[in-house]
Figure 1 (tube, helix red, strand yellow):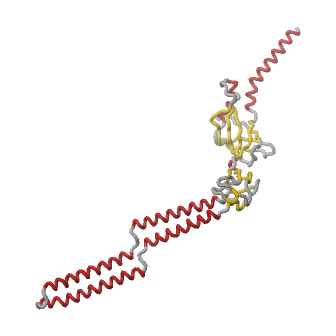
Figure 2 (cartoon, one colour; figure 1 turned 90 degrees about the vertical axis):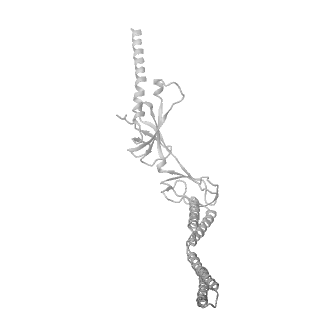
Figure 3 (tube, rainbow, N blue to C red; figure 1 turned 45 degrees about the vertical axis):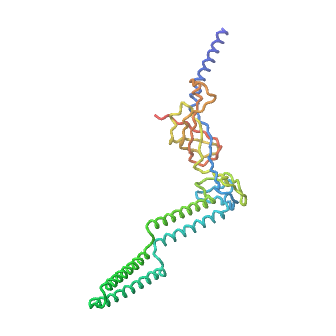
Amino acid sequence: MKQRLLVIVLLLLTASLIAALVLVPRLNRSHALTGYVEGEALYLAAPVSGAVAQIYVQRGDRVKAGDRLFVVDPKQLAAQRQQAQAEVGAAQAQAQDARKGLRPLELAVYDANIAAAQARAQDAAADMRRVAPLVRKGIYAPARLDDARAALQTANAQLAAARRQRDAATLGAREGQVQAADSRVAQAQAGLSAADARLSDLAPVAPSDGRVEDVFFQQGEWSIANQPVLSLLPDDRIKLRFFIPEQSLSAYRIGRVVRFACDGCAKGLSAKITFVSPRPEFTPPIIYSREARDRLVYLVEARPSARLNPGQPVDVTPLEPVR
């Protein structure tokens, strides 16, 4: 009798163990998913080496978008900007000069040439008037009249040429020269814009609201080019990271909202899913039997609605499958 009772008890224990092995994975699916908070810091640096002239923030400070963070000695780049600005002024002056004619003093030379040519034309016309009657009377040979007529034509041509030279002097440079001058202005302005950009890089501002995570240099210390001066943790780069079982993958889509809780946090926190890993995580790599699939997990990232601290553990409420 006792032996039969012992067999029954063993059978009941075995059945309980099998039921537990079957039901535990299913029960675990309804349990909260464990995750943590992660932050992606921005490391801000200057493009040139120089002494840190000013630090406006300290570790742990809250900053808003556009707040000044630090300044590296701008003397060298400020001199380059002044040079670029001077080149812009010179190029603009050359472009303006290319569109203008000669100065009044230079035009006076052409006016004098016109007056001289006009005087010669008048003398040639007077000589023509004197010679013509004498030729008709036979005092001068007809060749003398031809010479006087040729001299008058030459004087008139010289007068016309002098006037055209004066008109041309009032015009600007040729179209090609004007375009070349305009191109030099554009080139100089591009150099000035580049100098302004390099100068502004010496005094970066916060790209968004966030918290200063660490400050690596203090005022007066020498900073090497492209070496971070401080690290900033923007609010929009803080996210939740948690893992979901393979059986629940279809319920998690980008844009869906999950509920989560953390120690000391307010109730009712939520986060919007921004990333679902396309690859599972599983170690060691073995054949995907049904038991192994129960241990497959996928990484999910979500942006929280509240400001949290990186490294903080969270419990995420599982989502229901999408029907």
